[in-house]
Structure formats: structure tokens, C-alpha cells
Image (cartoon, helix red, strand yellow):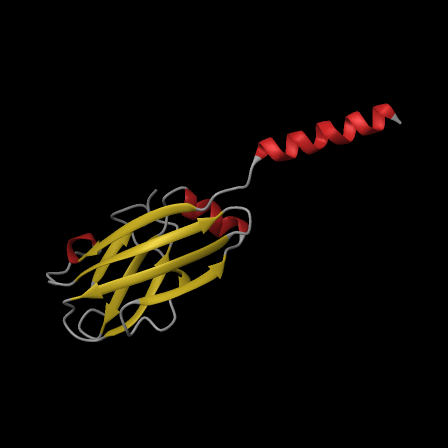
Length: 139
């Protein structure tokens, strides 16, 4: 019985010292020169992105201004490093208004690409349907 109690205490101590997993905080700066191909947009934006590796939950707040016209859509794209384009991986609903806030639970593959810096956010407009402003998601 003493061994069982000691084993239980040791396990409890190990769990206590392991501590909780903390969300990774990332800030994204969006502009026209980061688009591929680059745009001459005066638009700018920022996104505050949190990722919790334990739950694989991605949370964001995207803010932008100065676009050529109303935003028509915004997305997380990947996998791609800066200077390359990739497909949509996570849509940003309600991105036609700034700020746009939301969250999504990622797949294992999406989580790996995000944490490897292979995701970017871009905001689309009618004048720039491929994207008017863009920024790479990095830690």
C-alpha cells in the first residue's frame, strides 16, 4: 500500500510540474507588397493570432483599413512560405467587416504547417480578387 501511495504521489508531482500547454501568440502584418504578385494598395492590416497546441484551436482577430474597396473575403492560405501562393486552408467568416474575429480547430496537418510558418492571411477585394493585402503568420 505504501508503494501505491508513493507511486500516486510521484505521478501527481510529474503532472503538476509538466504544467499546462500555453497558446502560441502570433502577430501578422498585412500589406500589398507582400501579395504575390505585389499590389500597389494603400491598404494595411494586422491579425492577432493565438494557437493552442493542446486543443489545436486557432483564434484570430483581423483588422484592416485603406483597401481599394470593401473586402470580399479573407482566408488563411497554405502551405507556402513568403513569396509563394497556396490554396485556402481556413476561411475567415465575416471578413467583409473589420475587425473580423473567429476560431477554428485545425487538423494535424494544418497545425504542423501553421507552426512551421507556412500559413499566410490575405484579404480579397473586387479590384484584387487574388488578394489585396497579405501577411505571413509567424511566431
